[in-house]
Length: 180
Image (cartoon, rainbow, N blue to C red; front, side, top):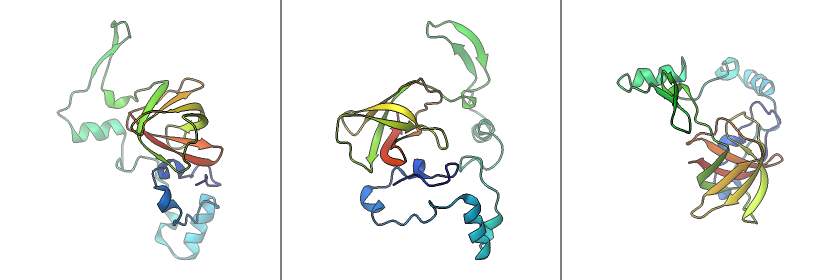
């Protein structure tokens, strides 16, 4: 699987988990078009979604901000707390952890799926940690039990458990896993 021509709408980051055997039988027809071309085709065929506004949020947050979403659904959950340095000293307070993304420079991931089977236990690639974020140079080490360790050449902010990490060789999706 390779990236689509419209980098702002490329879906390979979210499709990395498709099993290799299924991918051989799939047709992904819109990767050669930009979004405006697809909208035009949809309009020509009378599809109602032709004029639909683009979504800017994650799928289950339909309005408002993510922290408001959490507060509405869990008003009983108190998530305010202290900012603590690695030496244990408290340097301030925050209004809730749902307002922050936990970040790290190095990550491990599990439940890996490879569209291109790795041929070595360690390899170079570009790795992406969020949809529409840049894929940046990294070294991947294969670990036991279907896990990987990804070390970026430069520190990355926003590496968060539960997000996917997807490995690329240029425009080709190699595979990826779920950040632990």
